[in-house]
Amino acid sequence: MTKLTLALATGLIAAAPVFAQDSLSGPDAFADISDEAERSAAMFTEMGKVLTHPRCVNCHPVGDTPTQGDDMQAHSPPLVRGDADFGAPGMTCNTCHGPQNVALTSGQGSIPGHEPWMIAPVSMGWNGKSLNEICTQIKDPARNGDRDLEAIYEHMATDGLVGWAWDPGEGRTPAPGTQDVLGQLTRAWIDTGAVCPS
Amino acid sequence: MTKFIVNGREVDLDIDPDTPLLWALRDELRLTGTKFGCGIAQCGACTVMLDGMPRRSCVTPISMVEGSEVTTIEGMEGPEIAAVQSAWEAIDVPQCGWCQSGQIMSATALLQQVASPSDEDINNAMAGNVCRCATYVRIRQAIHDAAKTLEG
Image 1 (cartoon, rainbow over the protein chains, first blue to last red):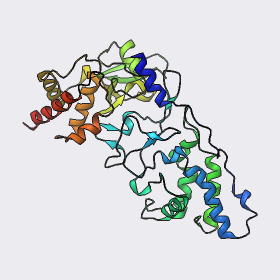
Image 2 (image 1 turned 45 degrees about the horizontal axis):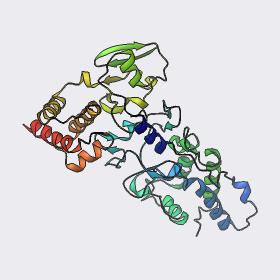
Image 3 (image 1 turned 60 degrees about the vertical axis):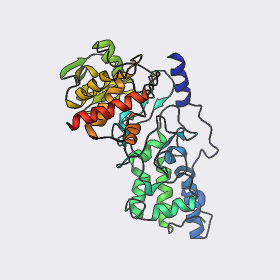
Image 4 (image 1 turned 180 degrees about the vertical axis):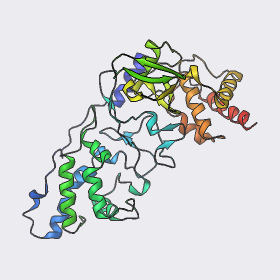
């Protein structure tokens, strides 16, 4: 039993790698790009540090199963998204994930939580996509939950589940920067034409 | 003080609110049908019902269940658990038995939501319940058998 516990724990709290892109610049850092479209695209590229971070992509899968951890392993236990993007009957997301992160009694690591906790819809799958593809997708109401750009700003700047990415609990690397800086970047990206990087 | 309902009875526990529900059930309330397996929500042995939905009690601080209704294997009632229990006994599903409380809770939850589950439904619902004796074939059969019983 001890061996089983240790083996499982090792998989769950594998050492977090240090990400090269662990900082996030605000809009001021792009002020010297005179061409507005170029500046806009550059700011989305900066936003991409967050959007392509495991804290976001793990639950924005292209397929039917989420990933987990900084190394983006397959979710354990195996979980399917189900009809409501909330798992299968008998094992839904909230079978394990509660309204807040919970430290494991082993003393190492935690199980992530937030209310709500769910998988992004299929139309919002990002895993493995280029920044251009993600950007185009984010702007497309048919694939972004029928959001206009202002709603996209609100999502990035204020959504609680997005904000969890900076408070992910022990054993997971937070997304770079802060949600406030992501919100500033999103605002500035929209105000400069919401241009996608090529 | 943390107040919640366990198997229809109101309980009031004056212990650390971060205490896992599993600890509270087993050590404070002496409801030992729910088992400790891994402590990290990977094996399913600690599954209980929280407000009618399966929940891994090893990663559930009691502060989270304040005012909620918890049902353990000892308090389960209804046609689905009765059908599952009969099906389990009929083909002797358990081997060592350690995981079976959690298996039965998950199987019952599945049947409460899907009356006639396919193999895929069973795979998806039971994927979080590990059996070290590998009784999976009998578990699957017993769930199908219980579903047939419930169909009448």
